[in-house]
Image (tube, rainbow, N blue to C red):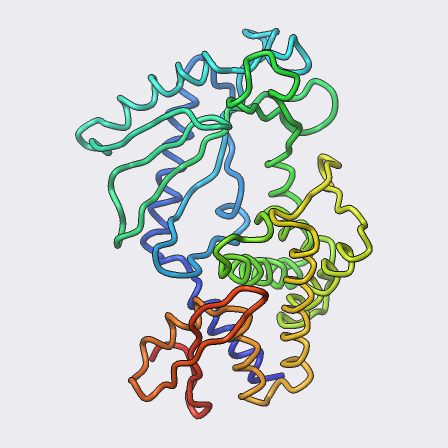
Length: 340
């Protein structure tokens, strides 16, 4: 499986976030957390999502880089907030945080062009200072510790302040703990497989799955001893079976059901076709043509951009991949498709 494994390693390099962009994202997330913690309403903050887990990607040009985190409110000051209180949402407190953080970010020695506004879950921060032509944003959820059970209450600020649907259970801190658990080799394989799965998902004009859904499938299906191609294939195949059998996927922390972002039958087909194409490559892992064909189907945008770095002798063709179409490049099998 040497050739297929090597091509997966090259693919990981292609979807890497620019080191300067990644560093800036981490720094800006840390700054946003620090400023939020200075507000009297902020009890403590946290990082979540891909940055602390190590599953960040930049699957194709034009992709933005964002840092995810949150600020946990002091519920003692606001007993009416959340389902444990009177169901009130933190609209007013979020407005206060926007007004508090924005001017501090716009200090001359920080980000004078920064913009902070209220989003569905809390704060959205635009720094107005791209790094290597990549916009960097930070999403800061305004959350509340649950009185009973683990995790947080996450608000939906698009709902009315006392709406029955204004809050939902979440556990972003617990999810980081799950995905960073286990032996070193398992964590490494899981982390890389998630990055490839997210890269595959991002090829479609409408991604079929949330990054969280893919990550939870990876946590469930990948076991110690799996190689990287087998790990990715296992997730695609087992997830397809689960959808085909209409077996729900429960979040291991919140026990909420995770659902595709597209119609159920389309999601199942997308997974099944991807698993089949990758399975063909796994069956003949040193056949350069078979591996190339599989990668063309799974990663059309990434492959196309990688191939653009080669000379014009590469042959351009059009294929259908996973139910969506787009340009793909057939690269001479005597050469690797990674940039020289």
